[in-house]
Image (cartoon, rainbow over all chains, first blue to last red; front, side, top):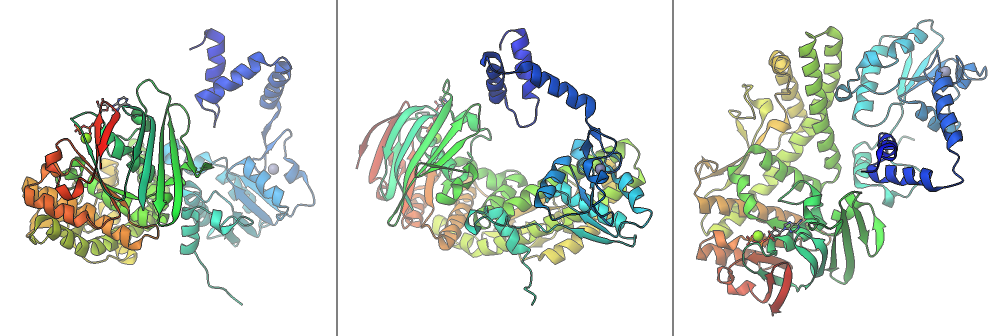
Length: 199
Length: 387
Ligand SMILES: Nc1ncnc2c1ncn2[C@@H]1O[C@H](COP(=O)(O)OP(=O)(O)OP(=O)(O)O)[C@@H](O)[C@H]1O
Ligand SMILES: [Mg+2]
Ligand SMILES: [Zn+2]
């Protein structure tokens, strides 16, 4: 334990995701000891971020305005919506440059353990966007884990009765890597989910 | 596969230890509490990333030290491997193979061992959870993909139980029941895969267990294994008591049908009790001798023979399928529990494994055939060896 405010800083940093007690201590002492470290700038950025950044009124992505830059972009097709859990998933998919439609950011996945049910996600907003018939395809891109799959199942049941194409991203081996480096669980699942080669 | 050298730093009561080992039998002797079990525990950790004695890793770090290091030189035919793991008190553990860092969870694929310990008696006498763990650990060794299925299944049960609890608390809203169906799908899908895998393993173990029991006990007491599955039981009691025994392979398809039926039948009780009442987390592996359940009927020596037979059977299966030689067998305090003729027969049953490590407090308890390389242990130090 350190004196008062130093320990408070360590505790506060330690509350951040992915930062354990050791790292929190290292960051705290970096801030304390490094002369060139601009604390004021960091503090300002943190304040501004909380003040200015909000969620897009349409899709739930992070933005500084009412609509995010994707929803504002007239070149994006309004016929396709890709449903993701978090704003960081939007960034990941945008990096691929493959997708030209719009997003719906749910804000998480269904997980009773974490107290998250369907009503806590932006599912109602999604249903509203689908009401006028502009959207013809919904791509479900929730995480390929238990909660992501459960959310995908829930969504596909909600969408089943609408006149829509509903697709789910394929999951499997990381492409570009070597087969030999895939871990045995991923590789084993890929074997289970193998498909007939069509030609 | 054999271990040619074991080095420990700050592991349990060892500050440092350097233990050269040979192919065939190696015996660690010393009085109670000197550090014999600690030696085999360290090697078991290297091959399973777990301990049969504790569930928390830091118990294995020497009192007052920050990190324990287990390093073993392994030999598989011509191939030499240096495997190392560092168990850290306040950060993630680190593993190395031939001095390059690897993912810690990949370590078990380089070294396989089977540990026989006094705690194995709970396989026969203890709760069903110990027998489920025995099956699941063997399943994962043979088919690593199943570790994902098992972890996901356990998580579905937790998610579902939480949902049942909140449904009970709020008086069951239609909406919440909507998501219960979704968890039911995952529960049935993952659970049925696990039921099929376990039942297939049980049918494979059966002939091995029969042979191993006879080899150890000297007589055939009809040691048999059977699945007791909660999805086939009419009752909602804890665990699968009362369900008919099955000795055949239950396909995932058959399991899924029965699973769904019991969920429908038990929905009311599940909502009342707010727990998931059926599924592989409530199943049991029933062990019988001469048609009677071993739990509650078998003598101490018979129970021991059965426990040894289960371990020996799993070692034989792993050995048959392995492409890295035999698993290293470790017999911790096993001989003290057996009569003279069972000692001799156990020694014969393990004699053709590439390497066997034995611990004993009393040298005379161990058959002479296994005392070739005897290492003396006192107060966490290797005090000498008599090859
Ligand atoms: N983390 C630790 N730090 C220091 N000492 C420890 C630690 N964990 C266990 N010990 C000590 O190690 C000793 C036990 O060693 P071990 O279990 O290997 O004994 P053993 O030789 O197998 O004895 P027995 O014949 O009774 O089975 C005990 O004295 C225990 O206090
Ligand atoms: Mg011991
Ligand atoms: Zn938007």
